[in-house]
Length: 368
Image (cartoon, rainbow, N blue to C red; front, side):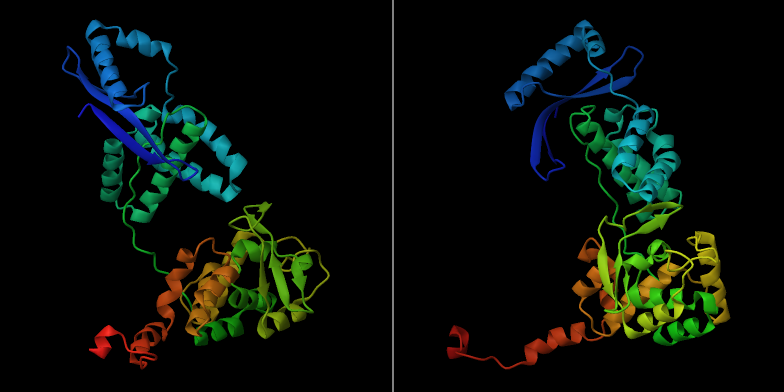
């Protein structure tokens, strides 16, 4: 069909629609060119009239002249710097770096020489198939597609495109995660070098991310009431707010509180620091946790394993997922749901509800 109604949801969540014309032109050399344009009059009749005008312009050769008068849609490669400027203004440094890596590695090699309106659903499906054949995980492909869709959204906001093309994501299984058993966690703390023991204990009992632990300062601590405020994060030397852009309060249990009181020092503002009081570097932290896990006779682990361990142990002890979400600083409960299967009694308690006697007046079926 040459005329069709296109529907999409804009950035404010509102449903939008536009009548578009989709025609094919075969050149004398046999090359087939596809032309898709939104109708100036956004009605079915308006689109049908525009289709007739467009076909007439193609037959008479006047279409290209009219096209040249319009602003040229930039190539994805040309628009990428503008997109990254937008990202730098609105995202954390780690997010900008991730987007740039996905652009450089996956999107620009495939779509870089195409105009933005030339990156159509057919080419996107080819891209997905190619990446799957190359062995990329669905989640990685979806990450690239998320950046591509954001490029389209920014282009619409900057009035470079008229609408955001549809991007369909792959079905991706929730990734597995590693966590320590209760016994393994105790072994890890016992085997950790004394200067790192407090940081490992706090990680296991607060669930802070590595960047949040490194950026933690004494002004965020209240060792009297037993709580800390997660209000900073660091990534490759860039200090900013925690992931999600919001601070959160985390109560300190007796183990974490005792570890911090014993660790109290006057070397500087950072809770965990080097001998000169400077914040710790990623490689230094990575090597420390690897040494500790090896000394404890465990598999190699990272700091994020301790965050998973914190959440997993809470679920296994029956703590509600909503509370765990708030402690971890997850933006949505979906992120926290990955731990739900570890709760031993949730399903048992659910089906036991049916064992309870019915109270009150019998319904119509019971009376019968």
